[in-house]
Length: 198
Image 1 (cartoon, one colour):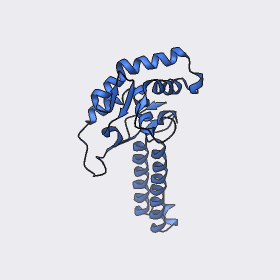
Image 2 (cartoon, helix red, strand yellow):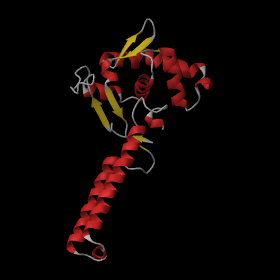
Image 3 (cartoon, helix red, strand yellow):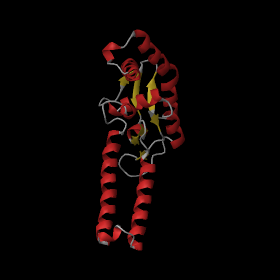
Image 4 (tube, rainbow, N blue to C red):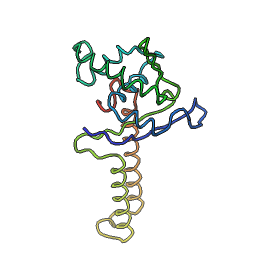
């Protein structure tokens, strides 16, 4: 599985529609460049409570990393993730303004900047192609089809131009609906597991 660049990062400030200035795109992409930090962001956006204990976060991330249930995690797997979160990842996320990490209490809280950001992952598995390449190819096919119809090439003259126009519109509409469904599954904090594990 290959993780491509973020498909969409939408920053909204408290529903006012104004861009947030609490975290820059560079800081956000730096935070998201590491899988453990992406897992932490997903967990924080998924949580209904305002905060999470570092031990609980470490257990869930260790389970995701090892593709096992939380009840099957070994002490060393949990400790490895816990130590990395405490010493490296959470301080970095705190510094970027994504979370508030109270090291003495071991509590992590999402900041308004994280809460107000909608994150979508573009995950490419196996021989799949990114959506941008798919739409580029679909546009090329539509242009070639329109050109063939305009030139009156056989067999495109067998159907009226209106039928080909409808076919192109339907192809784009179907693609857009499929893409919307896919994007909903890839939104961080929405599905049970992080998008790159779905």
